[in-house]
Image (cartoon, rainbow, N blue to C red):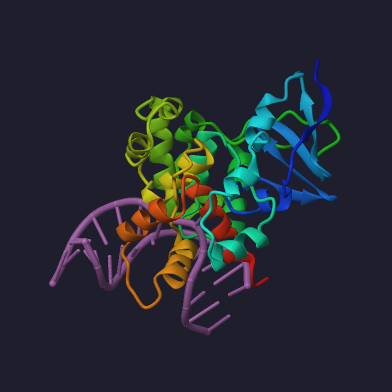
Length: 285
DNA sequence: AACCAGGACACAA
DNA sequence: TTGTGTCATGGT
């Protein structure tokens, strides 16, 4: 029966704040020394502890795999960080981002969120995604006492929305992109579940068929939803950072930077990218 | 008050 | 291939 549930995951070095607010997911809010959001259509509250994460949710279930999978609690972070190159920038990033981890998100929510992310600040992406969920998402399972929470709207639901309805969620010129991608996914023209079985290049090629999805957004989805370790999203921050830190007084093009990312940062370049991104974005704050 | 934001796209040269 | 304008909205 539906009821409040709680558990705790043993984890070594997991910083919820750095992880949930580092621009990979957009639905987490800090609430009373913890973090609250929606995962798999369920309300979730997380609190960090010593060597563990305490989790609360609500519903009819006893297996927490859906959440441990999302949080990737089984990943040995130390082993990953050991594969990073040792230079002054990466050392600083690792020191600054202790406990930062990559999540494993739902492909559609991740894809749609990043279609909305183009040329937007993270706070605005959160606002747009929030509106979209409130207006078109299914009611999430949550305790009665709390304010209603909503799941991220499925592709078929968003495919039904008019462009005006989407624009009313403040997404501007991204509306036709989201509508078009939702339609293709809803029709099965792009098989999001099937992408998980492909190699990185084939997976990226599938995502690139979607309107509003270019190399950067495709790489975000490959990394944050499918867990391809070599996906290396190059946004404006990473672009400036790479040029400044590794190519002073040169003008490398995008292709060159992507090649560099694959040869220099090791087998978990995507992870290294997230460390650099979070470091560059928050070091002066 | 300008400047810019986890870009993509069409089109020019 | 590289460069530019455009798209919509709002934070800093």
